[in-house]
Amino acid sequence: MCYYKQYNQLRVMLLPPRYIGKFMFKSVETIKKLPIGEKMRKLSNYVGIVGIITLTIMLAFSGQIDAEIEKGSAIGIWLLDEGSGTTINDSSGNKNHGELQGGSWVNTPSGRSALSLNGVNDRVIIPDSDSLYAESAWTITAWVNVNSAESGFGHIVGKRAANGAVANYAFRTSGNGAHWEAYYSRGGWKGGWNQGTVKKGTWLYMTATYDGEDTISLYENAVQFSSVGGFGGPAPRNTAEVNIGGWTNNTTETLNGMLYDVAILNVALAEDDINKLMDQGIKTLLPVEPLDKLSTTWGNIKSR
Image 1: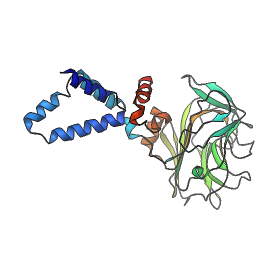
Image 2: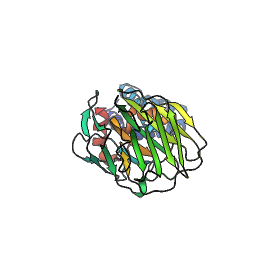
Image 3: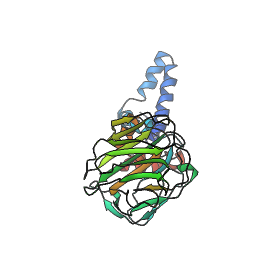
């Protein structure tokens, strides 16, 4: 194999996974149109150790390509990986940044940062914006570790007004801290109440979805354990701020526990999508860097 050919194949290896897939697809489509003799010669160019390595990379990241969140579906993504300070960054591109009130930074067993909340007045406050409104369907998802002391309505996320009467979306533990609940309001409270069992003192990937028409579903570690319907249409727009760990001005329904990778989407994710989020992490679903940031993208891939 000539050096020029090796160089070109190495360039393909260094592309982000989505571009490798496009390159290989176009190459195969081109080869299919050639005479049989020319087909064999072209195919031989893709055989060998470099081709095998390229294929391995494609297979390793194929799930990442499939699971990429479509542009505009993220309402907010808060990794909670700051590790210090009170500014909480939104990675969705919507600039829904928050301010930490109280709380403390801890490390998970895997060594990443997480936010610890005391169940009294700790929370992240995110000012209202047009992009925080879920017009129809929604998904709330996060890694959560509920402390054994939690004995009430511990909110993971709530967009609920200070008067407590209206809510666009919310996800919490139940009144005794033993079960899970997701809800919203539209002419009264609509929710899946007292669903499943809260396994305290362990990290769980918890997800709540509303399909925008009728049904709220709950998932633990990407496995559905609840589906409750009959609610009808979505909540009307409200101007309430979003709280991570509670809801506006409330001090009796706040989370006693730890969490990270909190996300709100304006779609109801299916179980397969939730599983990919759990396995690959929210970061892998952020937009892939353009080609002019190739070195940064390759550095991120190597570090995983």
